[in-house]
Image (cartoon, rainbow, N blue to C red; front, side, top):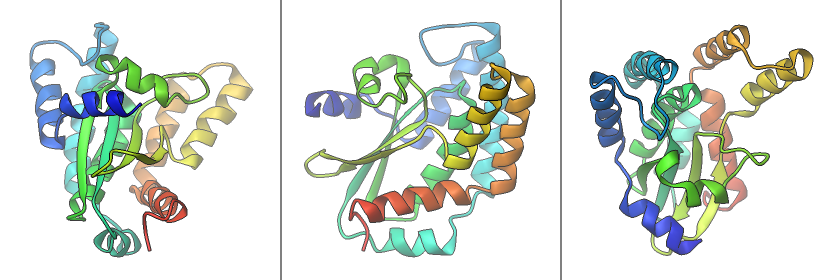
Length: 203
């Protein structure tokens, strides 16, 4: 596992680099990932708009800010993502703002399709769901915790709809985006902070 993580870190992007990569590919009529399609490009373009808005509007809440400013040592946050992923577009700006709030967090982003070995270590119910946040000890690269691909209320919204209707289609995707909009990133922040407290990465 350690070798896989270290290889991923060598091929990782900063948040700014990731945003620039996704934008550049869109300008070329492409999406990130090994599969190209009109739908994936359309989702990438939609996500680009979301990212621009969220980068301006997301605020780290007071509780999270206090906790992040008082981290006891340095951590690396490694996130698996793709530009076409709607959940990643909603969650990466939050994760980035949290990382920026602490001098002890270094955020690195890798593309899922380019890091299959890493993704396979952090499957969700056997699936390659993203985004996936992996919290590492910055010095040893030991895995402290992982989180994702969605905050619990969002996960439940999708799971309940799929159980009732057998599919995840446009109506529930719209409901999911509304949930993210109304939540303003607070649940994601609270869940990540709770996870860090549980793993004793926070005092």
